[in-house]
Image 1 (cartoon, one colour):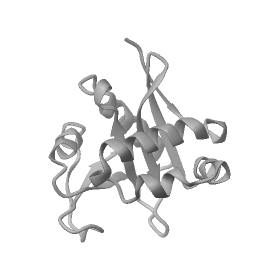
Image 2 (cartoon, one colour; image 1 turned 90 degrees about the horizontal axis):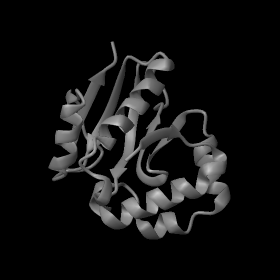
Image 3 (cartoon, helix red, strand yellow; image 1 turned 45 degrees about the vertical axis):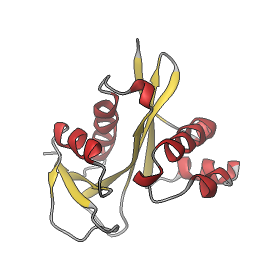
Image 4 (cartoon, one colour; image 1 turned 90 degrees about the vertical axis):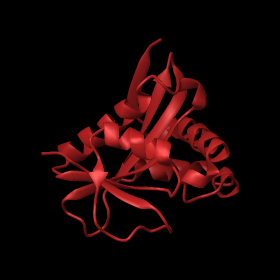
Length: 158
């Protein structure tokens, strides 16, 4: 089995849409949006997401089939950190270290932009995701999560 991770561009909007909707159906508790809200987005909205210079979306392909997603963005007013968001790997593709490759892609993107760390928030109760992030080198960080019970983590890039 061949795993390829690549950054998505505007013309990849259907891949982003497919992965995002699959993620929201399979793990609705893990994201800050809903399947219904995302399903109704237009092609133009999906393209705009991919064309935003302050963010990057990466897809993992397993033998050419979309199997995972992760995004990174540059929080407004933040000079040192990039934030990882919307990480998801399809259940059929789990156990192949795809999540680690997606984290690596986001971390590489952030490093190339001169960021010192990648930060994220894990939804309360998503212990599997927290363990994956810990395997990737993330550690707890101080701060107030956006969601009740969420856990903040950071990955130094130095």
